[in-house]
Length: 214
Image 1 (cartoon, rainbow, N blue to C red):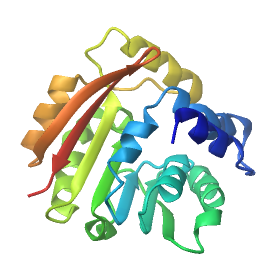
Image 2 (image 1 turned 120 degrees about the vertical axis):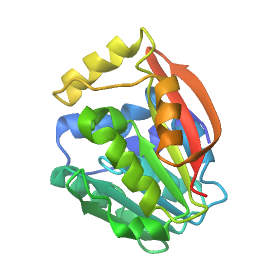
Image 3 (image 1 turned 180 degrees about the horizontal axis):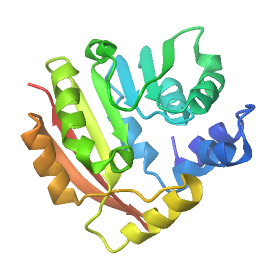
Image 4 (image 1 turned 90 degrees about the vertical axis):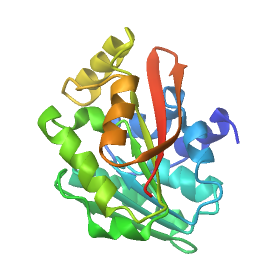
């Protein structure tokens, strides 16, 4: 599996999504390290994606791993519709589900999943709700479950590039925090951090924090 394979697969997808959504579905792998993210799911059976967008990452999990059960949640009903279309081909041999949620209350179903992803979602949560959201997540995940927390480094000068990106494609300015603050926040929320690293792709400064609920 290469980035070219991923882009080719996503580009082949036919959906009724709007122009901007189609761009995000097909070309986000150019700026987001999806291969690194997919690798964490290789030995897992179930995946839960918080802020799944149009479901392209869930489709990659379905195609390139042995994960049998996938659920994504998203605040935008239009994106959930896109996600169902993008993942339709996998429903014959996998359990795949997408739901709209209010951005505050995480479904209790999350306790049924071994691996939870939160990819570039945290900086879209209002600052006054960020800590509470992560504490709720830690409480609702099942013991032993793993969280892959990936976001943009607010401590990097390159963060301005992501802010411009979000203004164009999301119509808002993100509230990114630094890599160091993210690790501190996750520890205080009750997670055990097992690994963490940074990775810059073009002008996007990503960081990964891998956590476990004990």
